[in-house]
Image (cartoon, rainbow, N blue to C red; front, side):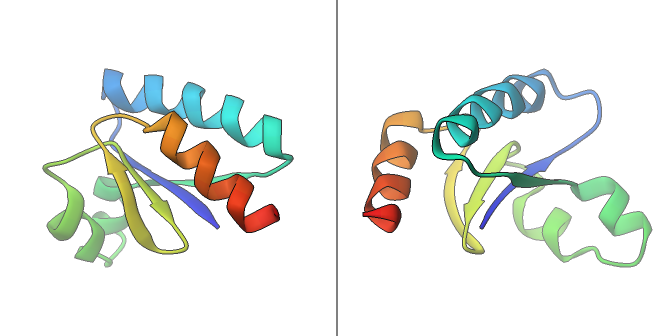
Amino acid sequence: MLTLLTREGCSLCATAHDELAAICADFGLEFDEVDVDRAASEGEPDLRVEYGDRLPVVLLDGEEHSYWEVDGTRLRADLAARQG
């Protein structure tokens, strides 16, 4: 499961979204996108506390995979290994 942690108005987050969407399309996968500020305002501050200073963050199966940018080469290799 892939999750992209973002924040509204973050240009790096928008770029990461596009990159992750392209990678997921190649693998026939989908990903969740979570705005950490919105989650915090809805009573779940943990993501913003943990990751808020490193956005965007890609989580693979709930574990931090990359931050500030999508590590496309590594992510593709990890996804291929899971499908293999």
